[in-house]
Amino acid sequence: MDKRKLRQINKLENRLKGKSRKSAYVIESMLIKFVYGLISYLISIGLFFIFLPVNAVILVLLYLRESLTGKSVFTEKTVFGIHGKPLKVKYYNIVNDKLNKLSLIYYVLTGEIDLVGVSIREYSSEERQLGESYLLDSNPGLISLWFIRQASRTAYEGRFNTEWEFTYKRNPVYDLMLLLKGLPALLYSGGNSEFEQKVNLIGIDFDNKTMNQAVEDIDKAVKTDKKITIYYVNPDCFNKMYSDKDYYSIIKNNDIVYPDGIGVHIACKMLGTPLKENINGTDMFPYIRDLAIENSYRIYLLGGKPGVADQMKRKLESDFPGLNICGTADGYFDRSHSREIVTAINESKAEILFVAFGAPLQEKWINDYRDKINANVVLGVGGLFDFYSERIERAPRWLREIGMEWSYRLYKEPGRMWRRYIIGNPLFLLRVLDWKHRMRGRDGSR
Image 1 (tube, rainbow, N blue to C red):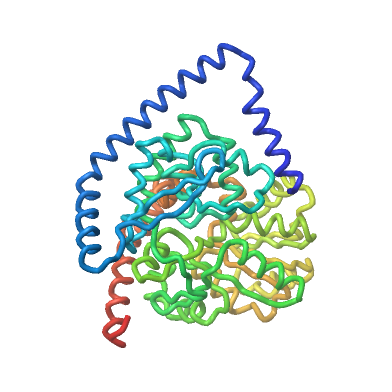
Image 2: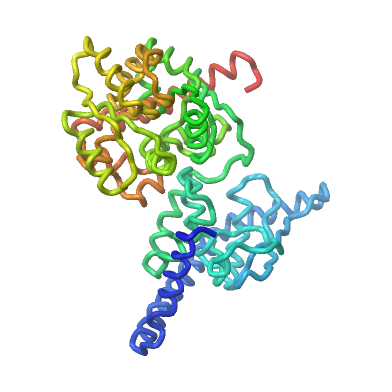
């Protein structure tokens, strides 16, 4: 257990115990818990009656199937219950990942599972991690922070750290907000648990990895003095590729391409090839930043409007001592001076280069000069500099968790973004459906 996690545990202990001696606080806390408990129970009853017809139909069909085939109605699993004790629960014995969990509503009514809590996971008698007892101090939940972030493929921190964040932050209001976020998360959740290493979407192959795996590849490239180039593709990128064949060719022939955004996640679910995680440049940057600090890697920032890269450098080096941003340049230089820019990058001895011109300009520029750039890792990162210089405010985490970051960008920049999201996103999904239909017609098997 690292020192940072131990400090988190101490903070949680203080939070749980610090005010316990104050009677007013105890009364207030008990009142809040009572009201929240009442609301939760009423919601549980409401869900029970809402899904009663569906549950009834499922049970009738499953019992009919059992009489004809002998296949059981339920599958039983032992999961972690309150205080880490084993709890046996029954799921409907059907393949659909959403419908088979409808049986859990019964356990919510009996109080063995809460509406909101830590995630439900299978019981194991193996020795637990330090601090895990706090995670198991209450009932598991039908909705959890881990479930929500997994559904949107933004659970980069891993299950343990995500559950810790929930346990540390939770209160009745926080739980109710999670319950509300759980509704859109249900739309994105489910699907196969087996993942392909490469996913092909409209002719583009991209890597299907976790954020940690992607960052490990960057670390390995620098340590072994290997050159890699990383591009990210979102629905807008795919739409641009339809009319820009040079851009399409660059993306198609690049070694490392990552999926970016909820639109690509939905498209992959439509094709039956689910993503592990949403690997976009903005979310990846903090991981690369920490990697650079830990290993003294040198970073160069190229792109953005005049002054934006400099502002990002000042802010980051102030907030993160030890981060070495060895050079900056804006993206509004005369392209005939590109060789001078490449020379400056090479003279800075940067190992990691971020290029933020926006797609497809950044990909075309990288493609033209990659052989001359000495940096081990070059990434095309779009509007990343605007976010980390704080020129543009990024959507709150809760919006990103439910796949609605695009709505915030539309709200902030309606004049620039309306065509991209209002027209572009539906157009992209229609193109995915058309491509899927054509692929089925071509080989007759997909």
